[in-house]
Image 1 (spheres, one colour):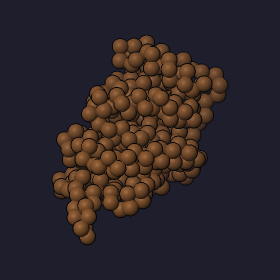
Image 2 (image 1 turned 180 degrees about the vertical axis):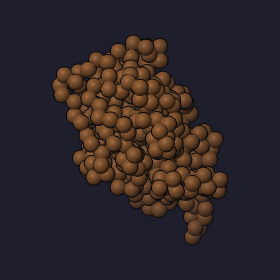
Image 3 (image 1 turned 135 degrees about the horizontal axis):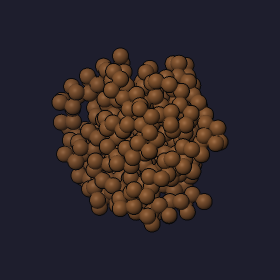
Image 4 (image 1 turned 45 degrees about the horizontal axis):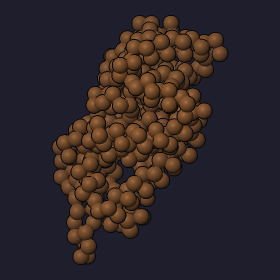
Amino acid sequence: MKKQLLLALSALLLIVALAGCGASSGAGGSDSTEIVLSHTAAPGTPIYLTYEKFKEEVEERSEGEVTVRIHHSATLAGDTQGVEMLKSNTLDVASAATNNMAPFTDLFLVFDLPYMFEDVYATHKVLSGEIGQEFREKTREDLDLELLFFLDPGTHRHVMNTEREVKVPDDLKGLRFRSAESPIEMAYVESLGAIATPITWVEVYSALEQGVVNGLVQQPHWAVTANLHEVIRHVTETGGIHALHIAFMNPRTFDGLTEEQQQIVRDAALAAQEFNFEQSPEFADELKQEMIDEGVTFYTPTEEEQQLWVETSVKIWDQFTDKVDQDLIERIQAAQQ
């Protein structure tokens, strides 16, 4: 399987890559800086194209003085690995989903709360304003990372499984579902009647193929990226959770840039986020069709069935009042109006 080949390459690249992380070199009497960036998205997907946009903006705005070398499709690192590499100063920029940030901080747990965001456009509205800037400031303070920009896979997450058609939460009883190491995501899966099984993203394909887990809650973007539609057979369009990716930068790399270069990176990051927010929802039907073409069936709950998904899952909110700032929840909800 092509996914397995990518994983094998990843192990090799992790050993030999990044010796020149954030390196500067003289060329024609002038200094140039290369930024090494790792993400997990496949070519042709919204997040892949957004990182290409970021690279283009940085290089054009700096007139080639700053370049970006991209490792895509998890060939260098998965989400958790990428953040660990930032913290060990062996990578310049990494992409990670909000739910995969739980091992490092509670800051992004609010994104895991089911039905927190009305739709993708409401999420964009919230993150393009003051709340998005607050996340940038808190990320530097709490994580010692530079939050560059948010990336949207284009849809909310849906219930996906290898076993049977699922219409209501009760249909999930007895199934084992992959979860990130997010306490909210695990509680959400279990509230639906499935058994939460924490597995790192790079191991999900093999876990589904071998029956270690029977499903997961995921976006079509990532199912297609990781070729999960080769093994997933059923999708229930429950929506409700809008997990996003975030581009994080090593603060040592950022602080090592000149003030002009730092501004170029900030401006390029803003341009990339705006590009992503405008373009990503347009890919939704295309990604869904890719899954259908692979033999995956989609089920849209009736109004009554959808109400069961909502009522069942929002009950977990009360379990996390000590981990998620309640004032932040209220402000996020108000900002969507």
